Length: 158
Length: 309
Image (cartoon, rainbow over all chains, first blue to last red):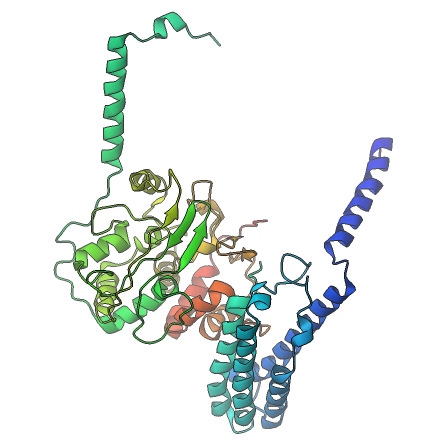
């Protein structure tokens, strides 16, 4: 290693680190909101996974497990998300955020989409413990509600 | 390199006229070579359309995703007044009315005129259409499928909403220039070739022709032509921030079953769901048969892996 690269390499690393830090939000409230939103989506996906696995015949149908997952989904969908939408946590303004600015400008419609998910989740909660056919029938509208919101309000990503 | 001799290059008045004539001849020849060529009048002779089969072609081709009114969700017997806007580096395209209205839509077009638009990108007035309408993909469609599609379109309601003009600046507003674009980029050969099974061939037809997946999933060159060497390797999102994902065999690691499931329910293996424009695509692919979704998955698994930053 030449003297020059010895000098340049650490400088480069420092610049990269600084860049990395700069890419993160300066506002901890923004990062916390993004983390909370992602955690919420992970919980939805985890419970959907139980129901979807049964619907797709990948795991055996279990009425108790299905009912528990569906009840969680319903609870998660009905929660008040108001505090999630911290200013500056939009996609393009904060690292890691895929929440499109349309959420902020169309909050009424966004909330309506959330309530549509809650309705589909309630229907799933009523069906999941009945039998596998009822669960499968409730899966379509639930997936549709997810997609309807992601269509308008989530940025595509590679 | 030798300096050009200005003296012998300088043009006399007669020379200018000759050059002008040659230039005009070149332009005329160019315009002739790149002129819009609709289908021959007898192209569809002997074919009968089946509207029920056409509904599936309509779904597979994603017609509603562009031609529905803005903000309207697809449903049975959709009105197709157009009006959705598609921003591009060349300006904003506005989807036209393709309903059965005889004034505002295509109700007055003959079957061959509609087929010429779909397969050749030539409008009823004999003009080049802009390739925002993916005739470069549809051009590979079977004639029977096109006739079925037309039969289905004929069953849909008329909508009197007038089409809006595209918002394009010079030179992109000169339709004659599209002939040259077509010469360069309107290719009739398949991208993925070789020894394909029947299922893979069916998938190729659905992806490369009807589904026109490459229009979003393949990067474009400076002139807006698809980069066939980086087929389906992902591209900037044409309708906003973010990227359309790389779905070549190297990047899309889902099993064929998982791909087919995604195209049916919209659920990824991790139980995320399709979003953005893909959410609309899934509404269309959900209407296909299980066999067709499996065929798409089988095809995607043989698309050469390309790494695209």
